[in-house]
Figure 1: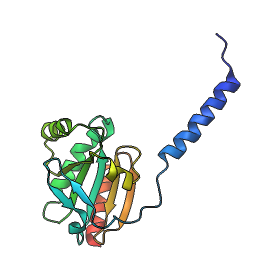
Figure 2: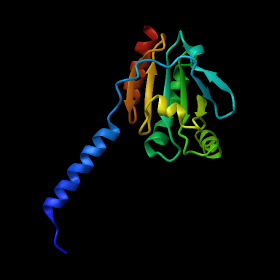
Figure 3: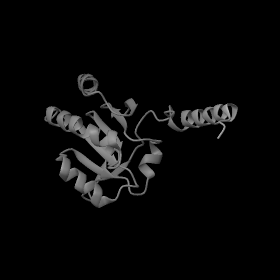
Length: 167
């Protein structure tokens, strides 16, 4: 079998361009849409407007994403460390996750921070989430301070959160 190097190069170029545009973060979302509700895995409705006044983290994740699952211990440690500061972590499971899987992961990993499930996919669309994990650090005014694709370095994340808490 003879390899067609020119064809292979063109295919690689097309794949690279597609990956660039699919994974490129959107610069359009600067703040959290008003009156936005998040449905927790326990069926409670959380209006993100009620969180104004304190910073929080919104992280879109999936039970099938190795990076997302690998990041849980760091998020759990941060949540424990930030108790009493008003900072919250809200993990939003993707629509392709099944609710029983999300609940089982919460139990298995001992997650104590808020876990939500975007069953309709509307929330992920509003935030233009294309890959998991995708995180948003939101300041006390409800403005997105940091948007990150991929896993956090735990030290860097803690420093950013502490900076948000200082204002």
